[in-house]
Image 1: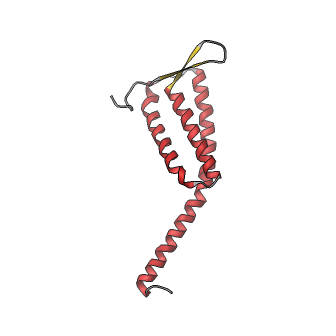
Image 2: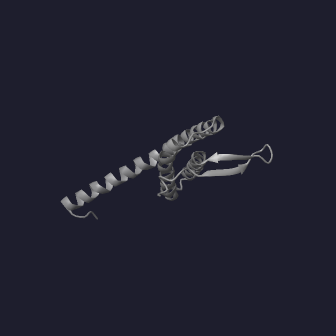
Image 3: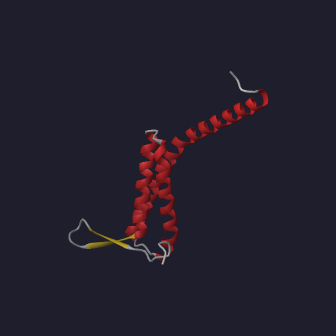
Length: 130
């Protein structure tokens, strides 16, 4: 059985109300992990530490794929749904800021690549410049 088709695992933790054990779903856990990774991406983007973003983006993509596989298999209770919706709001806000910080960097990179391509084309047409 592959991980994508495996039954959702349940995570256990003590609630704030005492010794009662609350069952937390893998769906909620995946959304929590996704929110954490995107928050880390936001911190890196704010610090202009671009090199670590691809690894975190890959982790996010893996979590999204996992969620696609397990969400249809699991029914969340009202508290879990509320938690997921709260996490989704946080994810959307953080992702929008990450995108806003990354977009100018990508545009600059595309511009530089275009400039290098033009220089290379001119070099082939007219010979190297000195």
